[in-house]
Image (cartoon, rainbow, N blue to C red; front, side, top):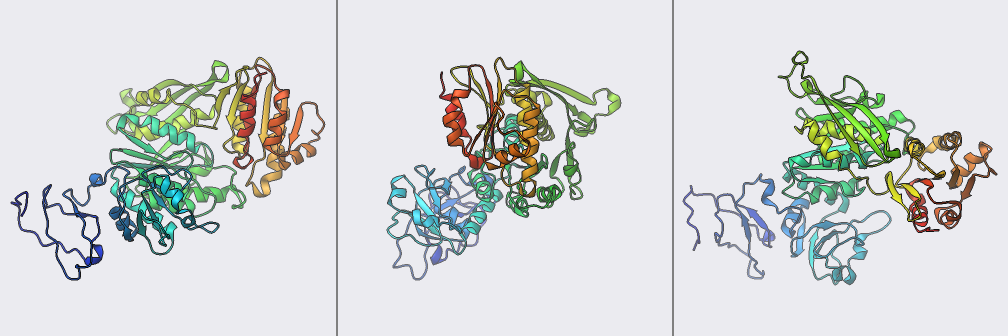
Length: 539
């Protein structure tokens, strides 16, 4: 008996194979809500039957899945897996340390560890509702979807499935420096279009991008993904998985040189983001970077340029430090005729300007704002709205983040990572900061520079010496070697430490109230320990 009468044209019967007879959602557009279906077949006497959920939405409806929550049948369909045990719907996590109650755990088997080893009672006690893995874990009593073979490939399949169900705009960006800050600004600039979902933290590798795609809620209009790399071919793989409709390349500079022979090779790898762009896609490019401008763009793909050049679609007219170096005034100009063919230069409405302030230190923020504006106006956001949105920007944690200790010491917390380009920008930031006592620069070694390592550390240290800072503190053997080469060892205003912990113990006695201190270094050096020590110094 049917609770609803189907008055439409008779449809072919639905074939449900016995192996598929576990709780899952079947797409049946011709059924009305609350319809009841009788399923029968051979070899079913030994099976436990469960309710079958039918969804009356069209097959191509991206909203047929409830936000970022996944149920076992959806997971199994995406990865071509088998449901061993049913579990409730939930979001997906790949790290047991950060898993929250109500999440599924995707157990990835890597070269150094196998996450299946962490599927235990402790994981169950944390509230994990199910596991996705390639081997059934002994004594696990909750949901389990079994995949065949490489679990990382299965994760990619799940991410691609998530991308296919999302019909909003996907922005993918890469670059050597400024990715996270610019990504945050793009999301802020697009907020007037509706809900924007972006990469969490710095999850810009394959696993991080996959998690971002899997987490996109059905209510989102735009998703902004940060795409990082350490070697050739990685950006292409990420782009194929994410399929951005807007592709942004910020810059190219020396980083990850352990895996590249030249900066041109880095540019080639970054340019992989553009390789499979299709007509109708947008490529947003930094016109001030010659390496970016030489990247090939497929025919029929629209190019949008940002930068200081007068012919840019969105031009950075002015970026200057204000408020004693604690903020940046930005003036942007938009070429109206680039976006509206009805507007001509002769109309007198060829450009529009917007001026706003970013309440955070660092002139590099002006360039990031220009890139974000180029993305936003190409999607129909007014330049005025972009300025209003970006004026509310707050710095990302550990990236030019201004902290003030109780004794008045101002700390520029820029410890997330470091390369020669970002080091120079940070030093210039410190020089621009108003200071009533002494300026102090605390630097940790720059890693992954390959053959450029020695020269890069010497160049940065020479810049510090020429800047006449009140004190220079160095962490690591690379800066120590550079100081010896430059005959700076023994100078009264230079101190050395082998690691951040030892410097944290000794730096406090060398600082006084109202000093301005820059702390920066590669991620592996954990320079945040120095920041924490200075903040705790209340003498």
